[in-house]
Image 1 (cartoon, rainbow, N blue to C red):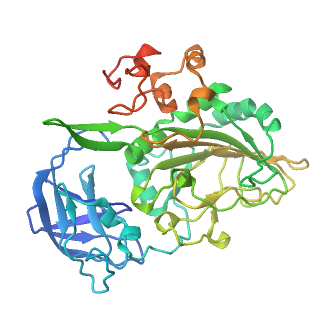
Image 2: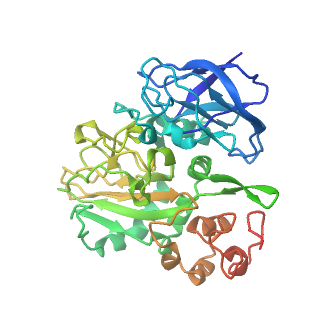
Image 3: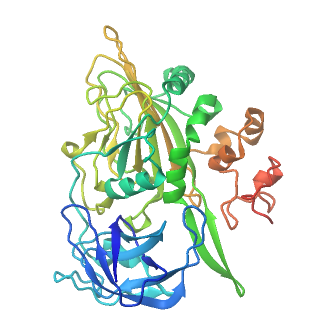
Length: 440
């Protein structure tokens, strides 16, 4: 039989039960990439005991290809096999790039293909260098739009535009809450943000509307799909599996005023010293509070740049503006190159780190305002110190839900990251003892 393998960007392959040893695999790469094919071979015959995004346990046999051309086959998600880390040519044979499509035996560790073998940085292979020419657009209100669709687009392109992500009313409330805080912002001495870009920090302390935006199901679901850390380990003779959900890295509001220059193209996951084989460690969502266009400073993105290696320099002419109406959002992975755009109009455009908002009122200066919500893996340190932004007593007074408290980092990332007096702070500080509370 032939197993069709969808394309994405990462590292290890598991094939569903029922696939016989020696079955051939067919890699379906993105446009312009080669096609890999060849027999698969079981590695150790062990079953995968990890869980998929829905929490269901998958019985799957880890397989490896004897031959491949574009990458190492890896990972089972929702019944489909995925290809991760498309490297051309394949360099699995002793770390030396091959041009004939053959890659020797893939090294294994504990019965699974070693993830580093999927990273060109470790195998001296070539990274992709092409830039995409368009951003995919979906409608949050369409019945076909779900987190699985967003995950596939993010894995392919690194970013996606989501129409109708938030209501116009919610965006208006956020904008009203953030207005006073833009005016009190100081200039960024590092030069990372232009002097004409104003920011609003600590926004969860000021705005219930932002708290509503943070927990939008579509964004949380795709973040759980892509950022949840799954790990299997031994305690004595017991083999245990845990899953740690993502948390808030930071939330920032942005106002880009007229005359503002473009921000340098960058990757958000640079804070984590991330390498390609770590992908993804962050996910961002920028929501428009006002209409956002190329001329007033829309965020610009280079599609496909999340697959580039560390030596590939981004160019401004490769960046595409993510033009949004109020309530639309741009969702992107942490290692795609992007930047706040230049505001060349006499209007002011406002942006909040989980979305961009622009007010078009001709005849007066306006700024482009956006709000961005950034999530990171639960095993990583947060960019913004949430415990100082929203201390426990403030979180109690605001009546934050258990979901929001855990997103802030007050929950334990299993097995034991974030304990307080060797217990889960959710139980000790907030009296929450539910299915996600870690028992100690």
